[in-house]
Image (cartoon, rainbow, N blue to C red):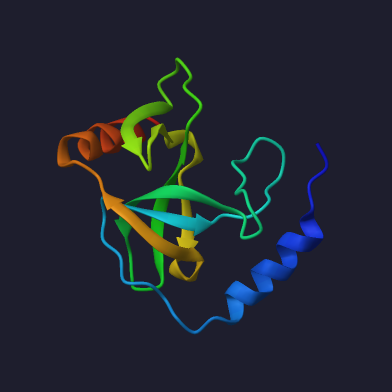
Length: 128
């Protein structure tokens, strides 16, 4: 599949010039413009290159760690069941943990259950 990096770069420029950083908290799930990425890195979809993400830890108003979510179920320790989000069964891809600027957030979807959140945190600790 051909990736449209040029279109993503235009959207990224628009996001970069945005003045607004979103208020967020750990455990929240947001739509996030993660973009078009290289190789097997998780891409966003739609014209805003978005996918749902889980906020794992905040560092400031501007940056936080997120874990992308997917509807693809895989039997490996890096895919942790999140539950149903917007009518679809979702899984956190802990191996794709990344730092993002909160300008990438568009809409808050929900707040994740505390017990599920702790399972995902444990899975992330397992990475190192």
